[in-house]
Image 1 (tube, rainbow, N blue to C red):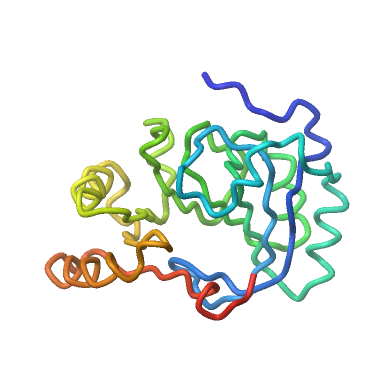
Image 2 (image 1 turned 30 degrees about the horizontal axis):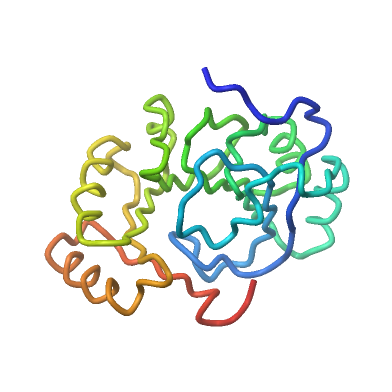
Length: 207
């Protein structure tokens, strides 16, 4: 079993936290409070938040302070992301968020056991470190980042492993969007069980 990163689960390394619109996937366009935890053991070469990788580079926040910050917004969805949030033991955090009236969502590659209580799990598997097979059944949403044409076959391999009611999304890697978005559209037209996910927050220039 992979060791979780956080030892003292009274607090977490937080790179940033902010109120915005969810930009991707099934809840795109909905207001949410984002909590980006530091620490990542995946290391995608095209990652757009590489500053999150080193957990020790970020200040630690107590659960009480994280929840209080979220409560200062009108949000009722709290999205825990990273980095790779599954490196941390998240049950104390999700218990506190749910107790404060939040829906809890996580965005994870599932490279570690996904702890905590979640209303929505977005699984975004990465080739750099495969998800744990035990965690695939937790996915409500499968989001495949398409970097090149071979990723369509890879996406189908994971679609066969997640629950049958899991929503399936294809999303271009941002720097390849001009090249890959037309190919994703064509693929979805031929395979309509998939949906298009776009990083709408980047087009809108919001966090």
